[in-house]
Length: 120
Length: 107
Image (cartoon, rainbow over all chains, first blue to last red; front, side):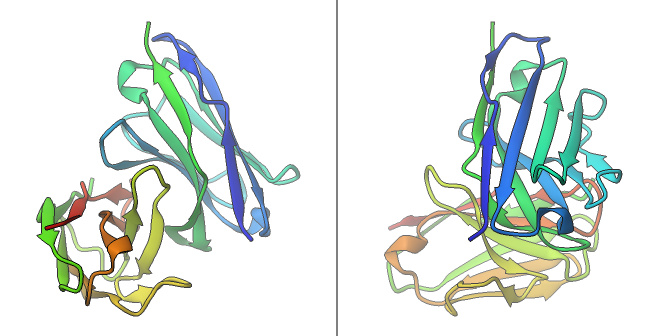
C-alpha cells in the first residue's frame, strides 16, 4: 500500500523559514515524480512545486518561485520543501502527492497533509 | 497560466440523481485533464485521469469526457458518499493548475 507521510508543519513568523518532509513507502519512490500541493483554510487546491525522478528537474508556481525549493533524497525515499521568506498567504495545509506515471503529472496518492501557519 | 473554470460552484441534488460538472480551460490541454474528489477533512482522491480514464478502484458511476478546452465529470446516480467537492486539474502546461472546485451538496 502506498503511504505518504508529511511532517514539519508549524507556526512560524512572517519572514521565517520552514522545511517540510514527506516520507514515501509502499512503492518505488525513485521511479515517480513528486509534487507539493497546498490548500489554504476553506479554499481550493493550489499546486506549489514538483520534482522529477532525477531530482534535478524542478518546477514552481509563480507564487513561491524564488522563495521555496523542492528536493528529494531517493536513498531515504523522502521529498522535501524548503520554504523561506514565508508570508501570511502561505498559510495552508501542504500535501505531498505522487504522480501516476513518468511524465504524467496528476496524482494518484496523497499524504494526510501538514499545516503551516504564518502569523506573528 | 492555464486557468481552469469549474461550473457550477455548487450543485444541489438528491441521492440517486445524476450530477454533471463542467471544467473549462483557458488554453487547450488536449486530454491531459484529471478529476479529484475531496471529502471534508480528507486529502483529495484521484477519480479520472487523461479526461476519461477511471483511476484504480473508482466506481463505474463516475465518468469523464471532453478534450481540448471543455470537460465534463458525470456521476450517474449519486450515492451518499459522493457529496463532496470536486476539482479538475490540467497537466498539459506548466504551472500545473486546478479549478476552483464544485461542491456537490445534498438537496
